[in-house]
Length: 232
Image 1: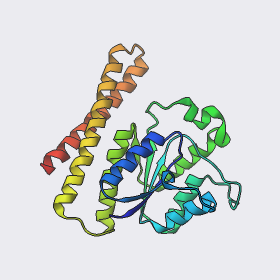
Image 2: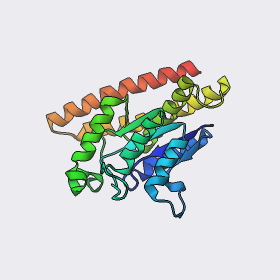
Image 3: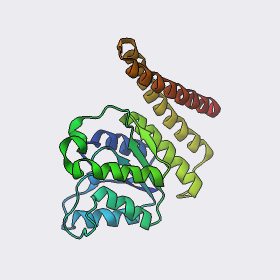
Image 4: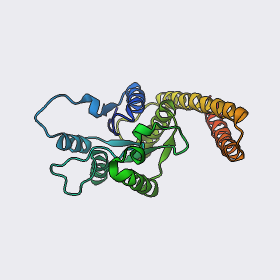
């Protein structure tokens, strides 16, 4: 079991946060996130950054909102989520980053480009571009898809960095199998939705886009099925 800091904006990513929190707790990790905070005299920013420094792994989820920017003790005028990301880097934590897929449906009320927040979306667009350049990121389409990606990434991270107490081979295999099953379920749902959309799409541009999406999904399905077959 290791201590993991889960960072994300709240209202737009609540369902995704819940899915990730649940899968990491199933894997018996100690997860620190804003849902766990109770009323204290501590300034929220100080508390968040202090907690980041006590963790062993950082998991960041990013949609299309830049998030709250504290006025106090924040001369760089960064959002709490960006400050948490940078604090994890300063502390030397492995940083696992997951971005909402640009092709996935997303409510307008949770897009800064629509609401006008975050310099009308410029801040989150710039931050996402930096993340995608600096890190090997993963893109998620649904909460279940994200949970599968996070569980696999965390497990591999712990193995690669030898963090925490080594787990028995059978336990590692069980965790990987559960994570792959979750991802397979999400991929099948996406594949079904894409094929159904193709059946009533008239625009040639949309048909081409959906066909490309189906091709990517087919490759992902083949890879996951292959990994499940290897695990037996």
